[in-house]
Image 1 (tube, rainbow, N blue to C red):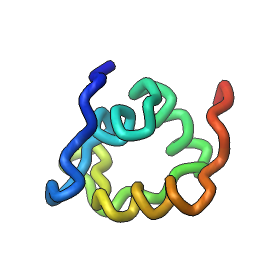
Image 2: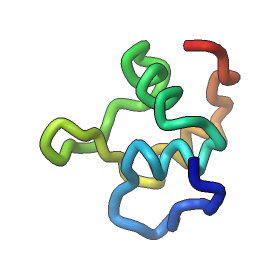
Image 3: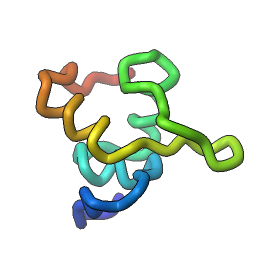
Image 4: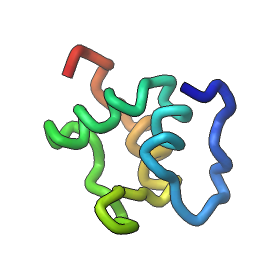
Length: 70
């Protein structure tokens, strides 16, 4: 897992970017996405979800659920 934060001005964030921003593992991001506890992807590249950074940042600042073993 990367310790550097992704660029908030990037056009999109990947699952790994979202994980780095939230301090989660990529697997946890996938679990939250599958459980519909994460905002829906803004788009997809192939089968890979991508998000507008502002969507994840707003969700995080708006009282996202605490990390559990999703």
